[in-house]
Amino acid sequence: MHRTPFHQPAWQWPLAMFLIVLLGVFTSTAAEAHTGGSQGWLHPLTGMDHLLAMIAVGAWSSQMGGRAIWIVPSAFVVCMLLGGLLGFELIELPGVEIGIALSVILLGLAIGLERTFPVALAAAGVGIFGIFHGYAHGYEMPVMDNKVAYTTGFLATTASLHVLGAVVALLLLKLAHGRIVLRILGFICALLGIYLMLQL
Image 1: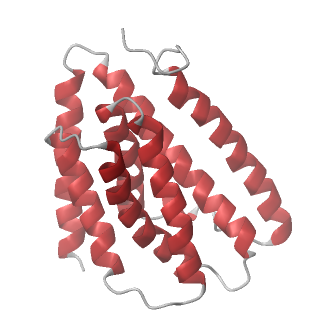
Image 2 (image 1 turned 120 degrees about the vertical axis):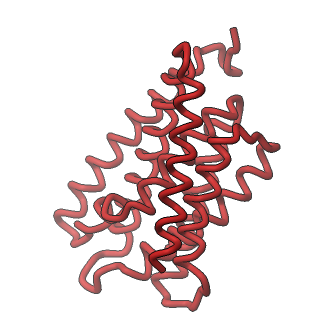
């Protein structure tokens, strides 16, 4: 049986992260209620493109296994923060909507085709996608919202969606035909990404 470096079953790490992130969501929501950042945690939930990409990052990281299960999603969140800062400053970043739609397509295909890459390369790839998603969040921040609270909110929700995707994928992979189901879901994600691309 594969064990993580700290000898805990692999499924316990996403579960632990989920509980930590859930606490972060509640904390950021409470803070936003007082500081004017109520849209931050909701923003990733308002678009199918963001939802699909963020869940897919978690699912793909579980599919690859090993250190990828936490390094790849972490890279997305960190780069999303960088993208958010660019968006706050209204710095021009070309091709944002295309980059977001492309992230849904490529992540879906990676899951569907069961493609694995070196962890550093996978982290760099999703990091690029994270910049586009973060930029969209930062650029669309309501004027009255507090930047810190807004950012904390959308990062916490993003991490929660990563963990959701990771946990679902790990549970599927434990089932007899779960691997096939996960691949089918990946291809569906890619098809939805193509649909989103055609709407641009």
